[in-house]
Length: 331
Image (tube, rainbow, N blue to C red; front, top):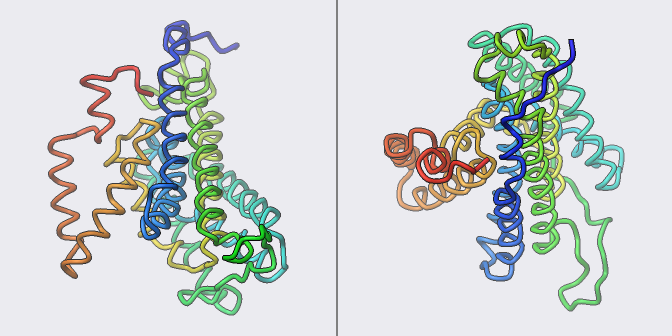
């Protein structure tokens, strides 16, 4: 049976405001690098990479309605795929990045083929078990991965002499790191935007709202969910590979349960099912932990209270609530 058209989407598709808004955010982030002090300059590089990871997670949770508790395995797949190939095999950064990307894609397809046979709480448990297995593998093969201690990658062989008094530029030079992080973020943002505004994106939302009715209309929900999981895992792996190459470190901490919970919190805080919500949630959570940890070792208590207050005032996340009340065109 051929898939029916979705005529109600036509008017929203013609609306150019979301495109201009998101292009404006990318332009603002580019200009921000010339204004930030050194400390915040590095922080923003890290935030943009982690926000890309959260955007991958948001495609699965916010638009397809699948809550994963094991997304750290995809982030770690990219991290280890890129890091180990550069460290042991001497791959150049671009080749190492591609290895990390393909590792995440392959893992997400394998996990998806099995985990998507379940739904609801069962899907959460299966993804959690897969992630824990990946985490234990990073510890079991300690001679290769160095476990919790991790591996510091020396990428000094790839540098560019610009004639500057500060020496040649490398991947970890602040301007190079910032702009590569911005490039990853911009690609993740535009891919997410065009996907959710396309017919495929509307089918994913239909599956989230009522999968039984979507199947009844002739859509093969398993294929759409598998595609969503594969894209989500690949974007997460791209973030992990970029993190390994720009911060020169690979460690099993990034495969732990904490890095599966964090993107969930970032997305819920910023606005589940909104394109810019992951960036807002990641930045707020990052600086909330950064500032509160300066004053007390019990900073997670402060973070928890702040999150409870935000949830009370913004039950759909900050941008989700703004969209509900004032900005219905926000994707």
